Image (tube, rainbow, N blue to C red; front, side, top):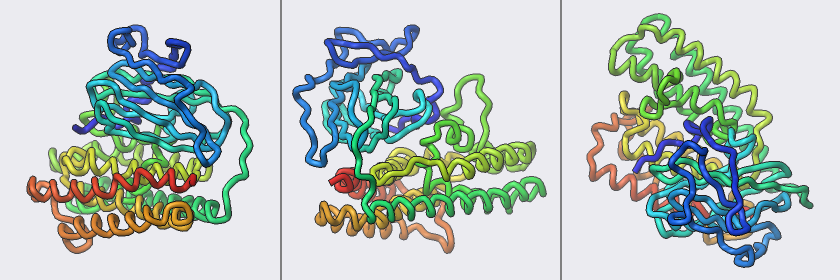
Length: 398
């Protein structure tokens, strides 16, 4: 099931946290139905259940349910942290680490099945954060987490090279998407429907390859990449998908010049923020997994590009972005888990081969021409890659 992406709902996040059974629990806003109850909440595991990872970081046990999000620690030292997540509810859920009063995403893990366990590795600096859970049909519930000053040796030379390389890559991809969006907007202003359609998917490629970095800022993603299905009642719809619907459904460019100008202004904001983006080796690894999750939850189903059916172009961008991260982090991960690196080399190759079957010159065929059986084969390739990719952050930490 395709879950609404978290950034689209970030503005409605509750900052309220409550203590339950002596540990951090949480509830939604007082006027929502997502408040915890004794009957359906899952208490957080005892703090004694946690151990310190071999890397010298921290562990937090996260007990998610249909209406609760318990954590067994409310304060940890700065540095690596592993969330040990158990979904004790009856629905698929998502778990996020949030910053900036809940308006930005540090990292996330989506599609956590009922009665299942998973891990999420991150590296947190000193500051205030939230651990946030959202079941498929429920409200988001949050627990406050304080990260105190901790000792850190900083990045190794290999890690810093990866971070520097990735920041350069992000900068280049954002510049590419801005340049191609300018061409798109020019076509809209020239009332050139055919040219605008041709430029739509390429204008999004750079964005799709680095989207987790943009999501970390919280406010940019919903302005530029909001799908109609995720539009809140009374909200103004802006961004690429407004243009997409006008071009493919209305089959004209009427009113799109102003939408295009606003899109460029929002992308200019992103350009200015990239130099201040908090990029770490673990955030890179988690971002690569998030890009694969985007494919699994949106591109495979055809929900991302509902009007243009250019989903496979987005798919390629997500895959390229994830592969770039892996290539940059490979020297670090190989030192800690050479077997994982070999597995990822193979799975990336298989996934790229599966997608290449649908190439059409410099682009890809329309996704509505891909059969259900073919979509299943693509999904299998993505899932085969996503599982080992979810372990890359842990391999980076060591």
